[in-house]
Length: 108
Image (cartoon, rainbow, N blue to C red):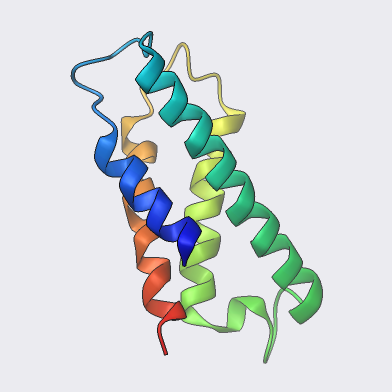
């Protein structure tokens, strides 16, 4: 829950219209924070996949919330794998906004 909260704060602080080239220290710090948060979510997903299995009954992708998590992490992976200097990936980056929805699954 703490990582999801930190992610919400960093998403709220990000200002793409003011710093389009990301040269300010604030923007760079937010980028590093986003990379760390993404790595956390990726490792969490991989651990769950190993523990529960990937596909089938009672596995990771059997739950709807886990499918949402998988979609968000996969979209982030696409962003990191593509050459972001030559492409406008704002559509993929907007998927980051879905990350706070993970909190709904964590609240009993």
